[in-house]
Image (cartoon, rainbow, N blue to C red; front, side, top):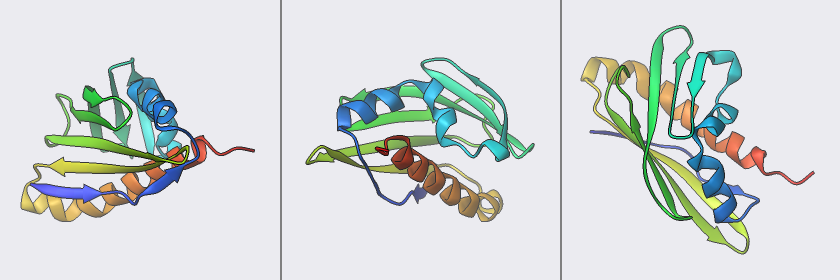
Length: 135
């Protein structure tokens, strides 16, 4: 099993607010690089999109532990099975957040996708951080 972790970011919002935002799969699009995705589809519990005209990625909301963790899993049609967890840790009204992915990737594909996935998860974490910046 391949593990990929985003960098940790501190979101300027309470864990409840971040949790509510991430629990609605329609909001995931706001965290993705718009110039690299197409064919976005979503509802409250699932989403799918194509990355750089290559792979279609599907995500399903699986479960959650209120205000501390959200679990997503790959949907049918994704290039490999994976789980993606968002861990939330509130401290003084701000929330430290990190994305953790576990993927079942064959060795050849692993060489091709681990770097881009790490970059994607870091980008998503940064976008989440900016989503709650106070102007």
